[in-house]
Image (cartoon, rainbow, N blue to C red; front, side):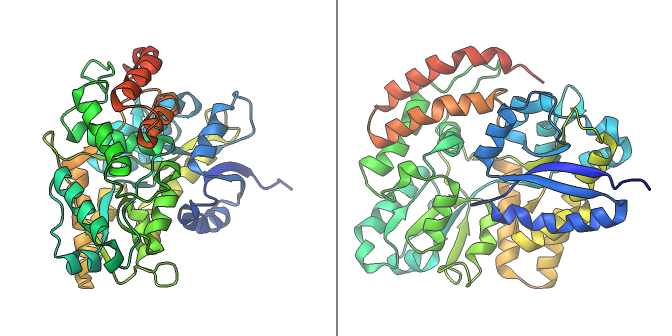
Length: 408
């Protein structure tokens, strides 16, 4: 009697990443349909997942791994081409992707990641705070600063402790710096792939981040130690009036069993600067390990979990934004049929952000780049370095990575 095939997977999940695990409830359907056992070897946070990939040598017994478009060019050598595994179904997925995602999934004409959803941020704010103080939503970054100052000045009258919090740790702070840099008129890399962040615009953007914390003191005091989940916790627990956060947290914020702000959540577009409005975006997804012992079955699994039906399930359950155009349209139609005013507005704001402001990573060694640069950005925010000094040191440390940025 033939033994049951086993697929071994290393997936994103665990503390702070629990919402990503909801999709894995669908694995039992795959196992039943294909007579397979899927063994989840590890559930890793995003930083842990990257550390795991750093150690892969090419002979490990792993078939499927969670991946991300921002880090694709750091790890593309680990992944198999989905077009080669299942041309028709992989092409159907690729053709249905939102346009900004398509280029982020392909290297050397190989389709290396099947996106689960797309991530961009919006301003999340406490409606009651804005109403009590008669505040308008900030249109520019200067507006945003003035709003934060007003909130801080009246903090004793408000149901919050702090005006603002952001993630100043890990690759999170690099993404936020990249947004501000472009909004202030600069670029992280120029058209030739050379690093361009050490510039007047870069200094101004980083100084703005530091000033929010050090000069104007409008931030949560633990901001320098915050990663994404810390920011979200500070908002849902009612401590912070404004954060920039991802769509996967929206349903948590609206859930009275998990959030103190469930009746007090507002969403708005990012502020803009002289360079425009830019929002760091990317996509969590799934990839087949190149040396999988079950390549075809692993490809089937990856395409199953990112199917129309499963993207719809995950987005309805968790509030994620689907990577597929067809599913995005279905969610919009659902909201209109239900006359769900919040959801209609939410999806419209995110769709506008994706279409008008999407800022993908264009640095090949993003993993190495962000690991080198984030501690220096963090030191500036803590006041241990000034903005120009921090950026100059960062630029000198990462300049050797420029030669990799021409990977297509």
